[in-house]
Image (cartoon, rainbow, N blue to C red; front, top):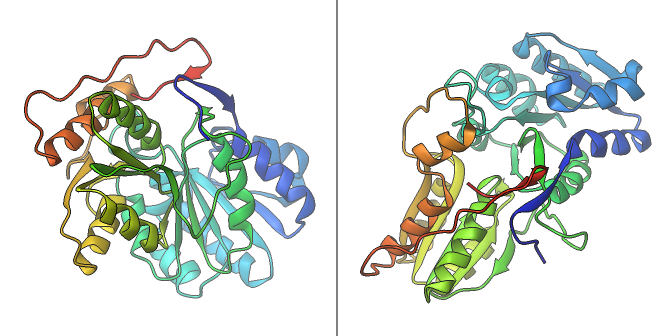
Length: 335
């Protein structure tokens, strides 16, 4: 079951879950790339100062350190913004972590255009970079419930993991009975007209878009895909086979991420389904005062998911308009 928008929110669900896990797992170490409070690990530093390593603004060295620590039997969790966690130290990730298949957990905050800081701070290609690496698991969770469960789930993955997280107020979309899985995508709704595969911050938009489309007489399936690699091919095939068309939604470039992963499965299985990918259309974004403004400008809004679904089905007329939700303080609504 999932809640309806606007969603209640919590602060620092990752930081709290990480501390709780570390109480039981003494081999866990925490590395910070000079963004301790910004990545919620000030909570870890306060409780476990002897297991906290401040690596400074030297991400390549931090990744190399994490690889060395993993060789000594530790489980290092590395923290910084997503763009600094992947693009900047890519060579070290390849040679010190992915190639030796070591249990390093790379935690990248501020995915896609959730940062208004411009191209230097917007991780629009991090999923593509990490997904291309052998041995790497890539996780992009949607809400606080999944964050708490994913922290525990990734701890014992034998190889490296990239965990992609939103900063700030985190919505609670799923109830306590929700179960995050590293091997199965989560089918939320069935539908035989169009199926929407969504990851991370775009799941809330996909759910809102599905409601708008259902009200207009469209049968919509929604699949939450928190693990982009290894992709749950079985669920992609099953859900796409039931529908006439497929839409993907991700806070990332349409090249190399969830949309590309789903397209590869459709092509390899010979499924003749029309596909539309909602995401950054092979462009850098820009700096702005509002991440919400960026989502709308670059085509990552609820309405964009509605429009893509309407168009891929070849429906006549103007697509239905998604309602604009009034969000009280402390709550979250999809863009």
